[in-house]
Image (cartoon, rainbow, N blue to C red; front, side, top):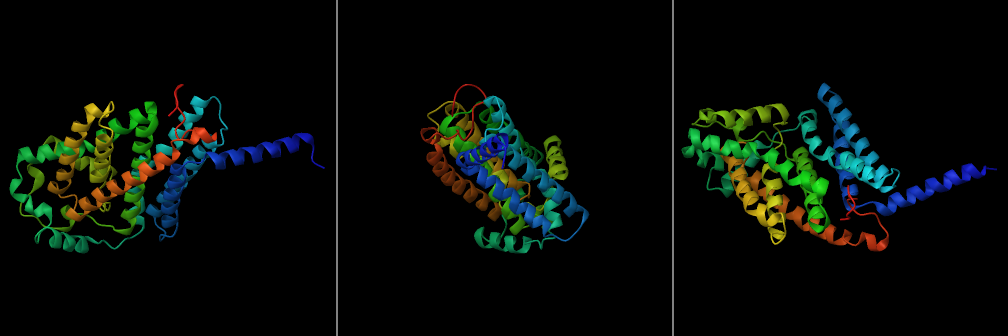
Length: 328
Protein backbone atom coordinates (compact mmCIF):
# COMPACT_ATOMS: atom_id res chain seq x y z
CA UNK A 1 0.00 0.00 0.00
CA UNK A 2 1.34 3.43 -0.96
CA UNK A 3 2.44 5.77 1.78
CA UNK A 4 0.53 9.04 2.43
CA UNK A 5 3.48 11.04 1.04
CA UNK A 6 3.50 8.97 -2.15
CA UNK A 7 -0.25 9.42 -2.56
CA UNK A 8 0.10 13.16 -2.01
CA UNK A 9 2.89 13.36 -4.60
CA UNK A 10 0.80 11.39 -7.09
CA UNK A 11 -2.20 13.64 -6.47
CA UNK A 12 -0.04 16.74 -6.97
CA UNK A 13 1.31 15.35 -10.26
CA UNK A 14 -2.22 14.70 -11.51
CA UNK A 15 -3.26 18.16 -10.39
CA UNK A 16 -0.35 19.79 -12.25
CA UNK A 17 -1.10 17.73 -15.35
CA UNK A 18 -4.73 18.84 -15.28
CA UNK A 19 -3.62 22.45 -14.78
CA UNK A 20 -1.23 22.18 -17.72
CA UNK A 21 -3.96 20.89 -20.00
CA UNK A 22 -6.43 23.58 -18.90
CA UNK A 23 -3.94 26.43 -19.29
CA UNK A 24 -2.63 25.52 -22.74
CA UNK A 25 -3.13 28.35 -25.25
CA UNK A 26 -3.48 28.16 -29.01
CA UNK A 27 0.08 29.41 -29.51
CA UNK A 28 1.41 26.49 -27.46
CA UNK A 29 -0.19 23.98 -29.83
CA UNK A 30 0.96 25.97 -32.88
CA UNK A 31 4.61 26.10 -31.80
CA UNK A 32 4.80 22.47 -30.71
CA UNK A 33 3.33 21.36 -34.03
CA UNK A 34 5.66 23.70 -35.97
CA UNK A 35 8.88 22.52 -34.34
CA UNK A 36 7.75 18.88 -34.36
CA UNK A 37 7.02 19.03 -38.10
CA UNK A 38 10.49 20.35 -38.91
CA UNK A 39 12.08 17.78 -36.59
CA UNK A 40 10.23 14.94 -38.32
CA UNK A 41 11.25 16.27 -41.74
CA UNK A 42 14.94 16.36 -40.85
CA UNK A 43 14.79 12.96 -39.08
CA UNK A 44 13.52 11.52 -42.38
CA UNK A 45 16.26 13.23 -44.40
CA UNK A 46 19.28 11.30 -45.71
CA UNK A 47 22.21 11.18 -43.31
CA UNK A 48 24.70 14.01 -43.72
CA UNK A 49 26.65 16.42 -41.56
CA UNK A 50 23.97 19.05 -42.17
CA UNK A 51 21.21 16.62 -41.22
CA UNK A 52 22.96 15.69 -37.97
CA UNK A 53 23.34 19.35 -37.02
CA UNK A 54 19.73 20.13 -37.97
CA UNK A 55 18.49 17.18 -35.90
CA UNK A 56 20.36 18.47 -32.88
CA UNK A 57 19.02 21.98 -33.41
CA UNK A 58 15.39 20.95 -33.73
CA UNK A 59 15.59 18.42 -30.93
CA UNK A 60 16.80 21.31 -28.79
CA UNK A 61 14.12 23.70 -30.04
CA UNK A 62 11.38 21.14 -29.41
CA UNK A 63 12.75 20.35 -25.95
CA UNK A 64 13.17 24.00 -24.92
CA UNK A 65 9.68 24.91 -26.18
CA UNK A 66 8.07 21.95 -24.40
CA UNK A 67 9.97 22.75 -21.20
CA UNK A 68 8.81 26.35 -21.25
CA UNK A 69 5.21 25.32 -21.83
CA UNK A 70 5.26 22.77 -18.99
CA UNK A 71 6.96 25.12 -16.52
CA UNK A 72 4.65 27.97 -17.46
CA UNK A 73 1.26 26.37 -17.99
CA UNK A 74 1.56 23.87 -15.11
CA UNK A 75 2.66 26.80 -12.92
CA UNK A 76 5.66 24.92 -11.60
CA UNK A 77 7.70 28.06 -11.05
CA UNK A 78 7.32 30.78 -8.44
CA UNK A 79 7.09 33.75 -8.37
CA UNK A 80 4.78 34.45 -11.34
CA UNK A 81 7.12 37.03 -12.91
CA UNK A 82 9.87 34.40 -13.11
CA UNK A 83 7.44 31.92 -14.64
CA UNK A 84 6.41 34.56 -17.19
CA UNK A 85 10.04 35.32 -18.07
CA UNK A 86 11.01 31.66 -18.50
CA UNK A 87 7.93 31.05 -20.64
CA UNK A 88 8.86 33.93 -22.94
CA UNK A 89 12.48 32.80 -23.24
CA UNK A 90 11.64 29.14 -23.87
CA UNK A 91 8.60 29.56 -26.08
CA UNK A 92 9.05 32.74 -28.12
CA UNK A 93 12.82 32.96 -28.59
CA UNK A 94 13.07 29.58 -30.42
CA UNK A 95 10.77 30.95 -33.14
CA UNK A 96 13.23 33.49 -34.61
CA UNK A 97 16.11 31.18 -33.62
CA UNK A 98 14.70 28.54 -35.96
CA UNK A 99 15.62 30.77 -38.90
CA UNK A 100 19.30 30.26 -38.16
CA UNK A 101 18.78 26.51 -38.25
CA UNK A 102 17.34 26.65 -41.75
CA UNK A 103 20.85 26.95 -43.19
CA UNK A 104 21.34 23.34 -42.05
CA UNK A 105 17.81 21.97 -42.37
CA UNK A 106 16.90 23.00 -45.91
CA UNK A 107 20.08 21.70 -47.59
CA UNK A 108 19.78 18.50 -45.52
CA UNK A 109 16.41 17.81 -47.16
CA UNK A 110 18.21 17.73 -50.54
CA UNK A 111 15.34 19.48 -52.27
CA UNK A 112 14.65 19.79 -55.95
CA UNK A 113 14.69 23.53 -56.53
CA UNK A 114 11.51 24.94 -58.05
CA UNK A 115 12.98 28.13 -59.54
CA UNK A 116 11.86 27.26 -63.11
CA UNK A 117 8.27 26.82 -61.95
CA UNK A 118 8.32 30.02 -59.87
CA UNK A 119 9.81 31.96 -62.78
CA UNK A 120 7.14 30.60 -65.11
CA UNK A 121 4.41 31.79 -62.75
CA UNK A 122 6.03 35.23 -62.67
CA UNK A 123 6.13 35.37 -66.46
CA UNK A 124 2.40 34.60 -66.53
CA UNK A 125 1.57 37.18 -63.86
CA UNK A 126 3.95 40.02 -64.73
CA UNK A 127 3.75 40.38 -68.51
CA UNK A 128 6.44 37.91 -69.50
CA UNK A 129 9.18 38.82 -67.02
CA UNK A 130 9.90 38.48 -63.32
CA UNK A 131 9.80 41.87 -61.54
CA UNK A 132 13.58 41.83 -60.97
CA UNK A 133 14.05 42.05 -64.75
CA UNK A 134 11.56 44.90 -65.10
CA UNK A 135 13.43 46.82 -62.38
CA UNK A 136 16.88 46.55 -64.03
CA UNK A 137 16.76 49.99 -65.71
CA UNK A 138 16.55 51.64 -62.28
CA UNK A 139 19.84 50.21 -60.99
CA UNK A 140 22.05 53.02 -59.74
CA UNK A 141 24.36 53.42 -56.77
CA UNK A 142 21.69 55.47 -54.96
CA UNK A 143 18.82 53.06 -55.62
CA UNK A 144 20.84 49.97 -54.69
CA UNK A 145 21.91 51.62 -51.44
CA UNK A 146 18.38 52.88 -50.71
CA UNK A 147 16.75 49.50 -51.08
CA UNK A 148 19.67 47.70 -49.44
CA UNK A 149 19.14 49.85 -46.35
CA UNK A 150 15.48 48.90 -46.19
CA UNK A 151 16.19 45.22 -46.84
CA UNK A 152 18.75 45.29 -44.00
CA UNK A 153 16.26 47.14 -41.76
CA UNK A 154 14.07 44.02 -41.67
CA UNK A 155 15.92 42.64 -38.63
CA UNK A 156 15.81 45.89 -36.60
CA UNK A 157 12.12 46.20 -37.50
CA UNK A 158 11.47 42.74 -36.05
CA UNK A 159 13.19 43.66 -32.81
CA UNK A 160 11.51 47.06 -32.52
CA UNK A 161 8.07 45.57 -33.13
CA UNK A 162 8.33 42.41 -31.04
CA UNK A 163 10.60 42.99 -28.05
CA UNK A 164 8.65 45.87 -26.41
CA UNK A 165 5.39 43.92 -26.68
CA UNK A 166 7.03 40.74 -25.45
CA UNK A 167 8.27 42.57 -22.35
CA UNK A 168 5.69 45.27 -21.71
CA UNK A 169 2.66 44.58 -23.92
CA UNK A 170 -0.82 43.80 -22.71
CA UNK A 171 -4.29 43.02 -23.93
CA UNK A 172 -5.58 42.47 -27.45
CA UNK A 173 -2.76 44.16 -29.42
CA UNK A 174 -0.14 42.04 -27.65
CA UNK A 175 -2.02 38.79 -28.22
CA UNK A 176 -2.62 39.58 -31.90
CA UNK A 177 0.88 40.82 -32.66
CA UNK A 178 2.73 37.92 -31.05
CA UNK A 179 0.53 34.98 -32.05
CA UNK A 180 0.33 36.38 -35.58
CA UNK A 181 4.12 36.70 -35.82
CA UNK A 182 4.38 33.08 -34.70
CA UNK A 183 1.84 32.02 -37.33
CA UNK A 184 3.62 33.92 -40.11
CA UNK A 185 6.95 32.33 -39.18
CA UNK A 186 5.50 28.83 -38.82
CA UNK A 187 3.69 29.04 -42.16
CA UNK A 188 6.74 30.51 -43.87
CA UNK A 189 9.28 28.01 -42.58
CA UNK A 190 6.94 25.12 -43.32
CA UNK A 191 6.46 26.28 -46.92
CA UNK A 192 10.22 26.66 -47.32
CA UNK A 193 10.45 22.89 -46.99
CA UNK A 194 7.70 22.36 -49.57
CA UNK A 195 8.58 25.03 -52.16
CA UNK A 196 12.39 25.36 -52.14
CA UNK A 197 14.14 27.79 -54.44
CA UNK A 198 17.30 29.86 -54.72
CA UNK A 199 15.78 33.08 -56.08
CA UNK A 200 16.41 35.16 -59.22
CA UNK A 201 19.88 36.30 -58.08
CA UNK A 202 21.12 32.69 -58.20
CA UNK A 203 18.93 31.14 -60.86
CA UNK A 204 19.00 33.84 -63.54
CA UNK A 205 21.45 35.91 -65.56
CA UNK A 206 21.02 39.69 -65.45
CA UNK A 207 22.45 42.31 -67.78
CA UNK A 208 23.17 44.82 -65.01
CA UNK A 209 25.17 44.09 -61.86
CA UNK A 210 24.04 45.14 -58.39
CA UNK A 211 27.67 45.50 -57.29
CA UNK A 212 27.40 49.23 -57.97
CA UNK A 213 26.02 49.43 -54.40
CA UNK A 214 28.11 50.42 -51.41
CA UNK A 215 27.95 50.09 -47.61
CA UNK A 216 24.39 48.83 -47.16
CA UNK A 217 24.58 46.53 -50.16
CA UNK A 218 27.63 44.97 -48.53
CA UNK A 219 25.75 44.61 -45.24
CA UNK A 220 22.90 42.82 -47.00
CA UNK A 221 25.26 40.37 -48.65
CA UNK A 222 26.97 39.62 -45.33
CA UNK A 223 23.59 39.19 -43.62
CA UNK A 224 22.37 36.70 -46.22
CA UNK A 225 25.66 34.80 -46.39
CA UNK A 226 26.02 34.47 -42.62
CA UNK A 227 22.48 33.58 -41.60
CA UNK A 228 20.35 32.60 -44.56
CA UNK A 229 19.77 29.15 -45.99
CA UNK A 230 19.53 30.76 -49.45
CA UNK A 231 16.81 28.25 -50.28
CA UNK A 232 14.14 30.09 -48.30
CA UNK A 233 12.24 32.22 -50.79
CA UNK A 234 8.58 31.08 -50.90
CA UNK A 235 6.88 32.86 -49.26
CA UNK A 236 8.91 36.02 -48.74
CA UNK A 237 9.01 36.61 -44.99
CA UNK A 238 10.65 39.96 -45.72
CA UNK A 239 7.21 40.69 -47.14
CA UNK A 240 5.01 38.71 -44.74
CA UNK A 241 6.25 39.88 -41.34
CA UNK A 242 6.49 43.64 -42.03
CA UNK A 243 3.12 43.45 -43.80
CA UNK A 244 1.65 41.70 -40.77
CA UNK A 245 3.03 44.41 -38.48
CA UNK A 246 1.55 47.05 -40.78
CA UNK A 247 -1.87 45.39 -40.74
CA UNK A 248 -1.90 45.15 -36.94
CA UNK A 249 -0.69 48.75 -36.65
CA UNK A 250 -3.43 50.01 -38.96
CA UNK A 251 -6.05 47.91 -37.18
CA UNK A 252 -5.12 49.52 -33.85
CA UNK A 253 -4.16 52.94 -35.24
CA UNK A 254 -6.47 54.71 -32.77
CA UNK A 255 -4.36 53.42 -29.87
CA UNK A 256 -0.86 54.24 -28.70
CA UNK A 257 1.82 53.44 -29.79
CA UNK A 258 0.26 52.48 -33.13
CA UNK A 259 -1.10 56.00 -33.70
CA UNK A 260 2.52 57.14 -33.96
CA UNK A 261 4.22 54.07 -35.42
CA UNK A 262 1.71 52.99 -38.10
CA UNK A 263 2.84 55.48 -40.80
CA UNK A 264 6.49 54.59 -40.18
CA UNK A 265 6.00 50.82 -40.31
CA UNK A 266 3.84 51.09 -43.45
CA UNK A 267 6.53 53.20 -45.17
CA UNK A 268 9.27 50.75 -44.21
CA UNK A 269 7.13 47.78 -45.28
CA UNK A 270 6.53 49.19 -48.75
CA UNK A 271 10.23 49.78 -49.29
CA UNK A 272 11.24 46.37 -47.91
CA UNK A 273 8.82 44.66 -50.30
CA UNK A 274 10.22 46.55 -53.29
CA UNK A 275 13.74 45.77 -52.08
CA UNK A 276 13.11 42.01 -52.13
CA UNK A 277 12.39 42.30 -55.85
CA UNK A 278 14.85 45.04 -56.77
CA UNK A 279 17.76 43.20 -55.11
CA UNK A 280 16.73 39.94 -56.85
CA UNK A 281 16.22 37.85 -53.74
CA UNK A 282 12.63 36.99 -54.59
CA UNK A 283 10.25 36.27 -57.43
CA UNK A 284 7.04 38.24 -57.63
CA UNK A 285 5.03 35.17 -56.64
CA UNK A 286 7.09 34.91 -53.43
CA UNK A 287 5.94 38.41 -52.52
CA UNK A 288 2.31 37.60 -53.34
CA UNK A 289 2.55 34.51 -51.15
CA UNK A 290 4.04 36.66 -48.39
CA UNK A 291 1.14 39.11 -48.59
CA UNK A 292 -1.35 36.23 -48.45
CA UNK A 293 0.49 34.72 -45.48
CA UNK A 294 0.19 38.02 -43.61
CA UNK A 295 -3.55 38.35 -44.34
CA UNK A 296 -4.32 34.75 -43.38
CA UNK A 297 -2.26 35.06 -40.21
CA UNK A 298 -4.08 38.26 -39.24
CA UNK A 299 -7.46 36.60 -39.65
CA UNK A 300 -6.38 33.62 -37.55
CA UNK A 301 -4.72 35.84 -34.94
CA UNK A 302 -7.87 37.93 -34.50
CA UNK A 303 -9.99 34.84 -34.00
CA UNK A 304 -7.51 33.31 -31.58
CA UNK A 305 -7.15 36.56 -29.63
CA UNK A 306 -10.91 37.04 -29.37
CA UNK A 307 -11.39 33.47 -28.19
CA UNK A 308 -8.67 33.75 -25.56
CA UNK A 309 -9.54 37.25 -24.35
CA UNK A 310 -11.71 35.94 -21.50
CA UNK A 311 -9.53 33.16 -20.14
CA UNK A 312 -9.50 34.78 -16.71
CA UNK A 313 -13.30 34.53 -16.56
CA UNK A 314 -12.89 30.75 -16.65
CA UNK A 315 -10.11 30.67 -14.09
CA UNK A 316 -7.41 30.15 -16.71
CA UNK A 317 -3.93 31.62 -16.82
CA UNK A 318 -3.50 34.64 -19.16
CA UNK A 319 -2.02 33.81 -22.55
CA UNK A 320 0.93 36.00 -21.59
CA UNK A 321 1.40 36.26 -17.85
CA UNK A 322 2.67 39.76 -17.05
CA UNK A 323 6.27 40.37 -16.07
CA UNK A 324 4.95 43.06 -13.75
CA UNK A 325 1.70 43.47 -11.87
CA UNK A 326 -0.73 44.22 -14.69
CA UNK A 327 -2.51 41.46 -16.57
CA UNK A 328 -3.06 41.19 -20.31
